[in-house]
Image (cartoon, rainbow, N blue to C red):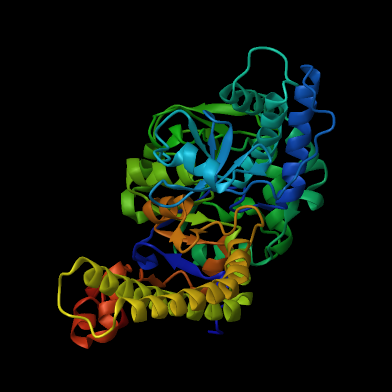
Length: 497
């Protein structure tokens, strides 16, 4: 096979043998159907704004800024801030309103606080659908601080109001009506997507559609995204062995809700009363246990692919032990930006290595001076005066080095998004979002069609996890062999003969 573009890769957290997967379930929005985020969220923002204007809120001069927020951020409704945390929950960047918090203010607010997603004050931006809400919230915080919003309101009330207003727009169907009427404005077509699913289907996998979108929306959107690229008279309906719309995830995975069969194209429903779900039919509702019973499959025989960390991959893994794949659409740009920055990153790494070496040397000289001044330890060859001169020289070299490092470090921190930097990192560390991906998604990738480049028979092996002491392996080959982390799979070896 041709070399795979790194941005189109499958990235494996937990070893996954696709030969052992008997069924693959797919979410629809931002999974099988990719949207132009800015167009979608611009429209969603507009509906939030209209709703707030109807309630008398002073938002007529506000405008959507798609770069103000990214997925993976956390709303702190106690302080009215939006924060980006690392994998341990430490806040590394924060905005109040549309302006970044200064270092001292951020330290004052969060030095004793860890982001705990189990607490009510924190609201995690799980999907790209969160961008419009977050953007509006940040702007409303500034209006509230300026006493422009009347009534007894707190930062938590603002978030609740934004969510309620957007939900009302969705419930009325206004947003989805616009998209159905002009799909070309909102949908990013992927001609490789249908071929990917056809490969999986012809390889013997059962294909499942499990989406929260209703039939009236899913039918035209899937037809637009798939039918043009399928052979002959085949349609998207022919791809899926079982289709479930209006699934009401995450309850779908844990609650035995009733299922209704779609009887006609206009959405006429008939309740499914007993027995397995019939293949090649479309159902509304239902539940994951019924799907397992209907297919005669359980747990790790099913892979579920979606874009929502909680609704799709967390619950399906936690409750049912299904295997999971997360679609992170922003990943492609992140990888591309890092590739373009590779030369500067190499320079930055070299400068930082030199900085660490000089800092270690400076600290050693400082300790030598301390021992001389305090009169303990072995006698030093240098006098206090000589040590202080050497420390002064080192200090000057470090200052000069910092001047070279600063612009490169600043540029690195602005990759992907000027305000927040990369999705998956905070500085050198993993972001809180990356930690959630690592914890719940067996595999993650930028789009479903990336499976096309790996075949339905591939064995995806996770990389050996990195630990701070792994550098010892570079100096000790024996240690390296003991920590290689290679997994031997006897079944796969037998299949290969």
